[in-house]
Length: 105
Image 1: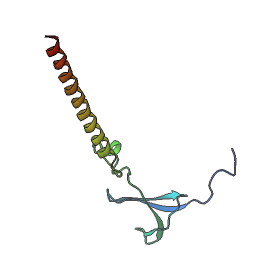
Image 2: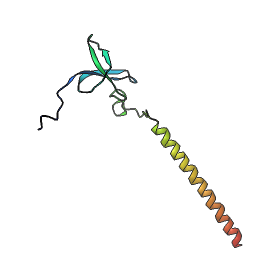
Image 3: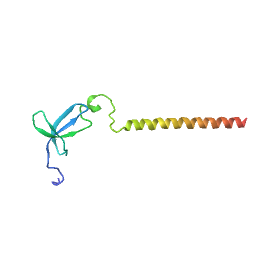
Image 4: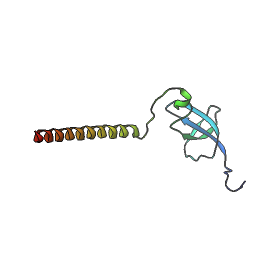
């Protein structure tokens, strides 16, 4: 095992999932400039996270969409636009076929 690749600066850090109202204290090398006063009265570095075991669907048993960057909305818009294009092309093809049938008669 290489000795120079593993971090040595472990310290106590508070991880906080503010949406779920859940925080926990553990050792980490994560860097941050924020601090928080913990339950024991000491001040520790604070790392904010978007998802924790209190909000992740795997642990909660609930299926909910956590979309912080609007990806779901953009995907839904692309799907709607694709369906509209598909319907327009089908209508155009149907109209062209009707014209061909009228000319053939």
